Image 1 (cartoon, rainbow, N blue to C red):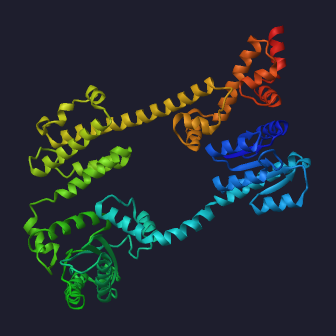
Image 2 (cartoon, rainbow, N blue to C red; image 1 turned 90 degrees about the vertical axis):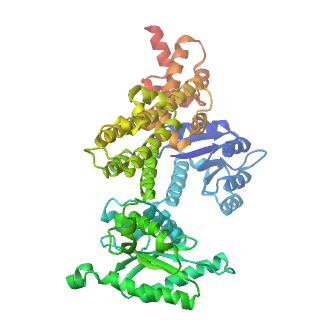
Length: 551
């Protein structure tokens, strides 16, 4: 919906145009504003975004051309249409030079005015056309691509990004111009600069990391597709895919990509030391893995890099070399990351995503018995911490306690089996999502009630969408959509209906003149009041008053 402001120092022209645009059918819906001087128009423009201004040129104190300059400063996209009684070339030239959309003689009538407004609407539509926006976005995407790629990779490595399907993954990789394939497994190498030279600046360090990557590409690019991700000042990840499909390697060379990488890593490490004079360490996976295990493999390599031989300089190890040593020491970071993801889903109200991850997470422990392992205890109390934090943040302890035995959260001993603990957590999660949904509905209902109360109490005042939105602290466009979605009717229809109902009461209960009654309920024009009244009741205000009295 666009906003049209009509400005003229002759009230009869303003009122007539308001009536004209209010009664139009089959025309794009417009939110109408009006002013009887350029200064009134400026007051409106200061508080409200206006899309189209239909203004007289010749007005006292400030003329239309001066008003146009103010409009251009405040709302550059606003389309200005000038009305004038003079076919003066100087006016046309000046207004066009300042960016006026059109110029209409008052003598040309409503049809030409309507044509000019339609033209302005089409111009606004074209500015927002999807094709135009996409072209503009593509240019910006090119500039922002490195940042978007880094954000994507960091989400994948942390587990925050989860592909729903191979098709979804392929689309994301294509969109970000990443030269990997979603239907093929990955190899991962973690790299670390063991020591920087003291004189190195931040920019020098960044250039150095590029140099390390270039060395790797020189050795690996013939056989592998390779992507580098810098995740700390001295740490980076390489993700690789073999350019030949795994099936083409044959059983006798099934492990060849891994052996090939291990051989090349020795050369890469030696080149970094010789040509860059800086020691580097590398940790590789021992076998290819599917995309959905990226975060898990990254956690494993990071964990191993910080343990044992991984703490030395210029190490070159694989996860298999160290995995047996730490097999019985589960990395708690993976569990904490999962709890954080569950927390995010709970906070955002993403029920399906929460329950899918919840079932997977709780399923890591055997449900038939209650294992007292450290992992089970850590998962249990991690979930308890998440739920208690959420309940306290939203002040839900009382309503939750009324429907759920909160004591079941305070001790793992309250549950006979892991399956019982899982069911208890699932029950609590369902309850919290239900409460969040109810709260959202209550908030919407409260907004609708406040808007309707405000309308009823201010029928004769400013009931523009902007003013109503200010009353409930929402944006005008969101309020308009919310009201229509919740009630099934537009705000404009509700306002007109209430004004007509109030007018009926005044017509029957007072001897006021009809045009005064119309103005008292918010109709600036008597003619517009009469048309709206007849449209809704089938009678003019006078016919309604006379008919009831005769009856």
